[in-house]
Length: 314
Image (cartoon, rainbow, N blue to C red; front, side):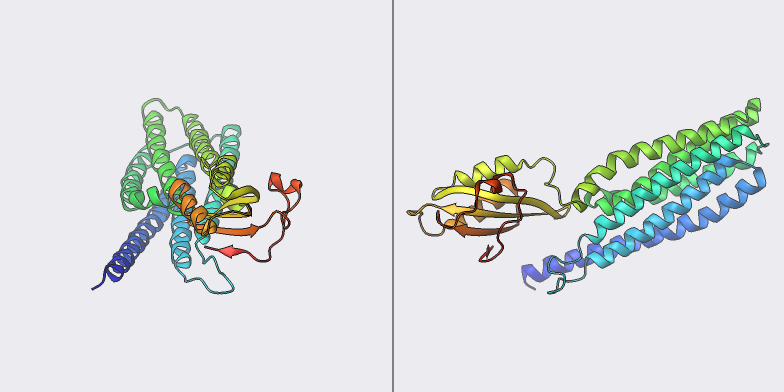
């Protein structure tokens, strides 16, 4: 078997194993959601019901992550020349928006509970929250490795992580209600869960939005890239420079390059190789121009559309 086929088979096996782990995590979370909802209604615990709703969102997030992974693996075609990799970015965005909406709903429900207190059965809360914590830990173990490599799975993982901490909070609330009758702890814990969710969503949503808005990759300075291109022998100027991420692992560049009259052969190839080696830019589209063909000075900012004809692709 060739090295290429071995590499392909390894990736296929990893994808299949990842899909199976996600499906198992989905099944476990759906079962737990039903148990938590029933226990929350019986015990009268808002924090338990809130945890059940959030756990249901965990299952939904995992389903969305699983579907996006499968869509992202579809091959590119003329109508989708970059492929379907950004499906995972869209799924991550949807999951983070869902987290924000859930957190705001929890805050609203907590306020209502403070205004209209209800009795809470502490033992049911503690027992079911303990079971939920075990399930959350299992789900985290199933998705942790994939979450390090995929913003899509990481969004689903953070759903689960927030739910695990929510279960700990619910257990603390149930214990304090049992020991001291402090019913007010229930909505306070709910506020804590909501705050934690909002904080995580705020941290993670920015990079996802940046990819969707075709922003330059974080940590990659367009000015530095421009100067590196200008330093290549035979390059007189670089303008209409655009950097964006196709997905979280692939960066693209588009630019107009003005070449000197005495530029050595293979200039475009040398620029492309430099971009790949120094900045890990895997796809570069360069329009090579002479001095007479060069665009106006306004293109220097990179905010003008520029000409598209005659581009040379790597």
